[in-house]
Image 1 (tube, helix red, strand yellow):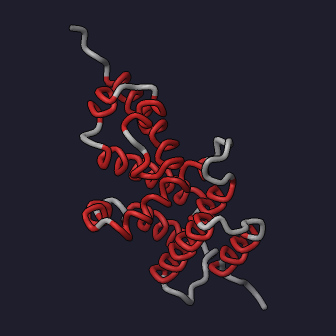
Image 2: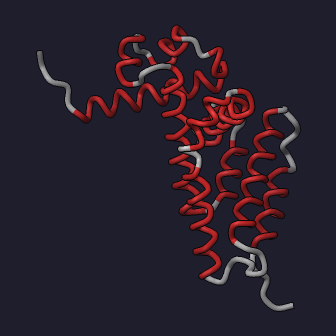
Length: 197
């Protein structure tokens, strides 16, 4: 029997994550049945669960993958840019903007954190990545003289994370979003250092 290359296995894993992301975003965790996951990924349940122990492990891997991608954006451009990306295209839209993908996963993570104690315990081990990236970016901005220095970096990190969660809730409720880019301008301005009078 021929051996499968690591590149092939990695590509297959990526195919599963990308396909399942749209399935979870569209149907939610419970609605993302094995049949729907098969349709979304174009693979059999055997192929899917060869790479992931079960649906929960698949969802956690997807959420962790999204958190890593968000942390990369935070490291380069800040947490407010992640929020701007979430506004770029609502979940279920046709854009390839990361926001459409991230919002669906983030909504399911938030919902499951409220309702599933076991998931909350498993997610706690993975959730520090975005916080750490935000804190590091803010410290870098402070060292560069761009960030206000009258508020502790941990407080600013918590502030931005609360804004992110509020934005996710707002979008989840289907409330109007037309004014939200301007709101994010205010948020961004609120953490900047103001020079002169």
